[in-house]
Amino acid sequence: MNDLVNFLRARLDEDAAAIDGLMEKSLQDSMNRDKFLTHQTMVMLSGVDHLTVAVVNRQLRDVESKRRIMELHDGAHECSTYDHNGEVDNCVWVTDWNDCSTMRLLALPYADHPDYRGEWRT
Ligand SMILES: [Zn+2]
Image (cartoon, rainbow, N blue to C red; front, side, top):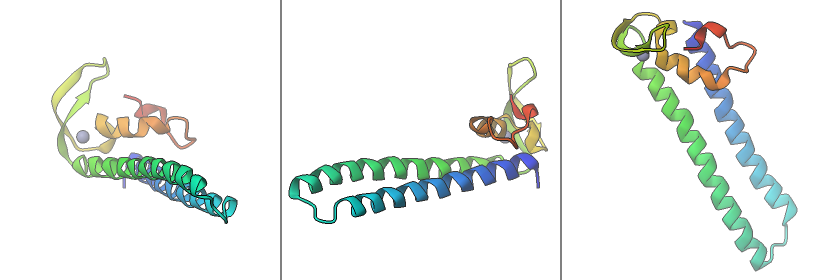
């Protein structure tokens, strides 16, 4: 298994777990704080919780979207990639994930992670 793929899968798993944890904590905090909710508090919390749920769902879909993009770039494939001068070549046969610019770009948000490798920057 390629290091870039392992790195991405681990980060996406961490993201999904963190999102789940935030949602659980948010709901638990609301329940602990407001055991006897007034109608006004319930309306306010339902608005906040609705927004929280929307953001959490969007983040979970973002993780799923990235996982599906990874599937599309799995194995040997034809891909648009950046050359070393920043130009796009729209028809490159990629046999190694390390050469796929899409996979590298998926890893870029995690560039501050200690396992991120500088050579993955496109
Ligand atoms: Zn690709």
